Image 1 (cartoon, helix red, strand yellow):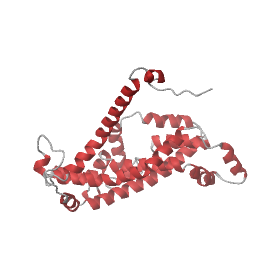
Image 2: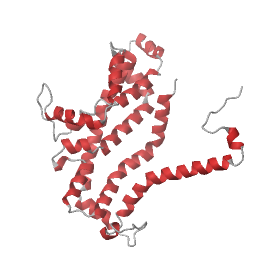
Image 3: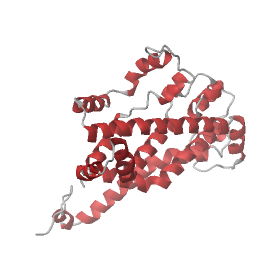
Image 4: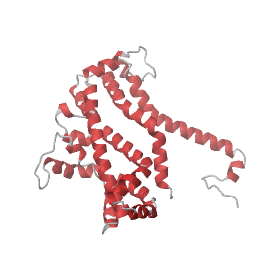
Length: 295
């Protein structure tokens, strides 16, 4: 029995008249439109830095600069102190990634393999938190880090104000749990008979088998920390410790930075994450597909 592929348009419709030609034209037009929507802002940001402030504000805008000014990128790097703020952002991103990975892996392992009492209730509560808009959690989260309950410690202007609120990520925990569920319990039972404890099972069996999904979670955590703006803006008021996005916003408000220099700063700040995604895009797709299939 031959397998059938279900799609929006059937093979019969494609064979009828000019159906296949129309289908390809519509599909190609949609692909071009999506590419322009995603690439357009990046192109405008990169090219805008090469223009003079007058040309950048010109109406209608020019597609290519009439005069190229590549020195704008060097001026932006020096004037905006981008290097220092990118080091700050990298430190926050790597620290947040490590803490988030430890907490999320532990929570997913407990919910998937240890089966605690009311584990499904806990998982349901975490998934329900994904339905809440992020803006609704800003005030209670800010009050919490401003004065940590029980301890009474003020975490503002410290890395912990960024790391602790994002330690337990409900989406990452769910993705990890789904992947851990696919690991056969018979494999863990065999290792348990040989004397392996729960931590050893996690370290020597589950984590090595979970490298694809761990790569996906890691990339999402780093990119999320790098591009976050609202929360660092609230908790990092000290200019010396701000992230690149917050620092650029603050410098733009001063009015001492030209628009083309700001475009150059934004382009430089986006380079690490674009490169990271381009390098690991195959790992992201493979990890997500691995987590969606049953073993």
